[in-house]
Length: 437
Image (cartoon, rainbow, N blue to C red; front, side, top):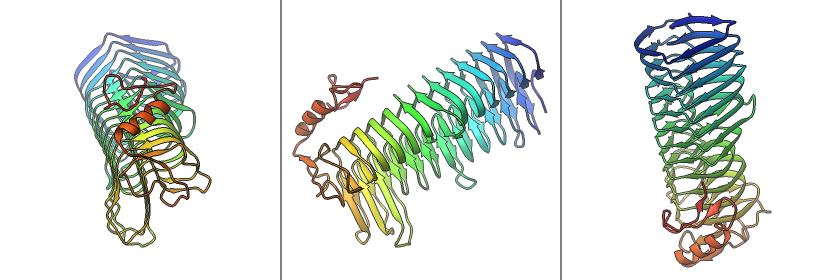
């Protein structure tokens, strides 16, 4: 235990600056492993302008990081540091910090460029946090991140008061479906549920894949607020809760997705399953459900924005929505939402909604597949030919537009004038409104 340039640092104010550890080789069989510090307890720690390369950790080591393996109840500042060392661990391996427990921390202008392999709580910057106040600002990951559960390019599992801003991931993130494959994200795997988490001005460009709760930004953000963020990487899951921004839950606003999304049931361009609110979003990627289950009672929920959601506002979809399942009992598929349990306002769909199984009980619509009786679709529109009806099982008739020019006119009139939106004057998005960030 406690392996590193400094093995264990307790009860002292420490500053480490302008340090390079090149070609380190730490073959650990236990926990608290860091190239610079294995374990830090107590007062203030400042680490600036440091760089690590080589190999750190082992198959059975926990709390592994290039800067610090384990931190408890300290005041931390880490800036302008980069990890180029391959990291291997069992639980809590992170590119910079393995496990951050309580205290306060600021991590800014840092990066991980190496591959990280572990089992649980694996992150490109931080593996796991338990109740700290943490800010991660302007950090990025380009290494491949692999594990079983709670895996992401920036932070694997986040518990505490945490803000992640100005960060990006361009390294493929994957969860082993044979040993879990759950809660996988480009930026954050999951919110541990023990604090307030915000993700803003972040993006993912890499492939994100796993089993359950897989998202371009977060696998299961829970009550996390995700703002002004986007995904352009393909997102793939072998089970449920697969989405371009969030796999499952989250409050999502001013976000968009360009990646193709593939899953089984609860699949959406922005969120696979969103029990919270989604507003001011759009999807450009193709959405596919390929659920195969012989049970006549099994169901599929797939939508251009969300597979299932409570409330949705100010959104549009430009990606095809396809249900390829040949053996499933119920299909709820919509150009915007597969199943809507609350309200919908100011939404637009321009692509086809198709299905494979003719024998299934179908709730298919250009806007919603299935909706609550109180949902009003009078401010939602779809392009002629998207599907024969606009509401699935609903009783209202949504407003069809005959041509793309007609659709662009109403979208620019109703969306581009809203705060946070703008017209596509430079034809970046083929004339459809853009989010102004």
